Image (tube, rainbow, N blue to C red; front, side, top):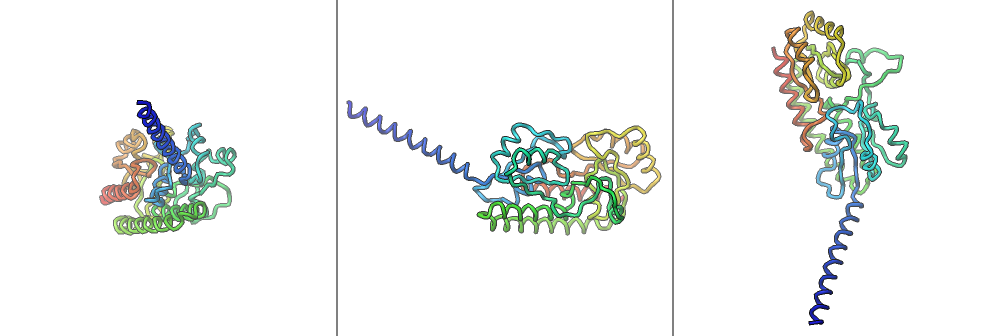
Length: 309
């Protein structure tokens, strides 16, 4: 009987040690994973494609509960905790992440990949036509580069180069994934140009300053932006001026965004007689890696419907 008890106890101890060592092994493996934190949704989708299928690379999105751009995003303590464990932080830059200085001050050793680094940027409030003129004074830049397919491709390349440098172990896999995704983006660009180039020069009105890069790429003219910051509301005077502009010009459509209320857009549409449509700036949506491609194809279809009249 004593021998049976001793054997049972030894077996129990062996199981406990095996389970404990397994947990410890998993913890060590998790710690050894290369951890990438993306600042918000569009950066996350890009990184998801670049890291696709690489088992020991973890990708997290910081502002996952934020429904739109990061203009007024406030860092949470949980954000800083996650960044403390990160190996690299991927941001859009160009002023989008207003909290970035706080991050770099508190975590000076955290590598930061800025997707817009080295890019030629439009100024806030600037259209493609304005961009041809000289600017002698400093202004805020428009950070919504990813809404343009061309801009998204440049950001993907910059992120890829940054990850290859930060994590040489997976450099080949990053490069192969990026090349595959860039090919998909190029095919999307070709498809959208074939569909939208016939409408080049058409005037539209938008409700947020997210689309100048997109308009520049596809030759559209943004006649007016009703409220440049989506969380704000235009004054009665601004609203009346926009309605008058639409009535007295050849504006084809008014475009609001699915991330924000369309009440003001509906008012403008009713008063001006110009229909309102939804264009997605891809600041939130499905967390699947194909999400950007899907959203932009939907935008293409919406624009075809809106501009063909």
